[in-house]
Image (cartoon, rainbow over all chains, first blue to last red; front, side, top):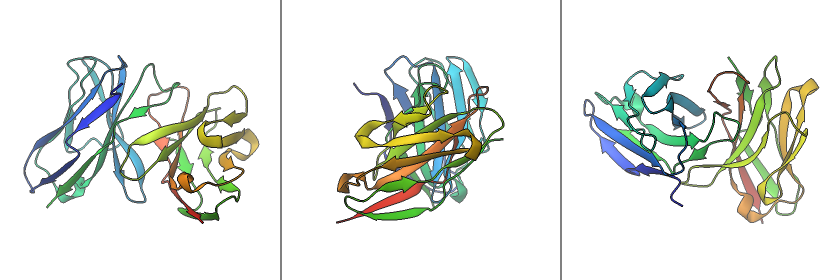
Amino acid sequence: NAGVTQTPKFRILKIGQSMTLQCTQDMNHNYMYWYRQDPGMGLKLIYYSVGAGITDKGEVPNGYNVSRSTTEDFPLRLELAAPSQTSVYFCASSPRSKLYGYTFGSGTRLTVV
Amino acid sequence: AQSVTQLGSHVSVSEGALVLLRCNYSSSVPPYLFWYVQYPNQGLQLLLKYTSAATLVKGINGFEAEFKKSETSFHLTKPSAHMSDAAEYFCAVSEDTGNQFYFGTGTSLTVIP
């Protein structure tokens, strides 16, 4: 079972560049999430989706965009990358709300220089 | 908004000693409470969860946690530490309504041989 797959694992961006972090899950989960993890700060929710075609902002959405055209995929788009977006990004999914806990991907380590 | 406090960003124990990782939350209603473990360069894995059933919850790898409403705590324990327990541990809380989990800042556990 693949679970939640994130690509790429590592990326270095220059200030002002754009990129898309890919996330796909094969568990038919309705709920998907994007978090960023910064040292000593825990995880902060960027965006989440409760199903195909439905997305909503989390705690720290500025500078990011998402889309959910299929149940499986939930890409995160960074426009005009800034050094403050240097972080580790995790995608997660759950089958029905949060009662079952999340399945996390292995993360994307992004550095903006 | 919910908040989660993990006391002690770094905890060191000797192999075979008791592990105690502290988590306190702020909530006026019974929440959902989770503990996750993160090994180096990996995503988070669900360790155990409390969802208003038994107050003493058993998880994987010999860990358990007790929900104490009067103390708004959900501390994680393991009777005897093993070298393989060295990792980062995150406490997360969510209320019955809403889709967001709030994560603590994490506790890094070191096991000394």
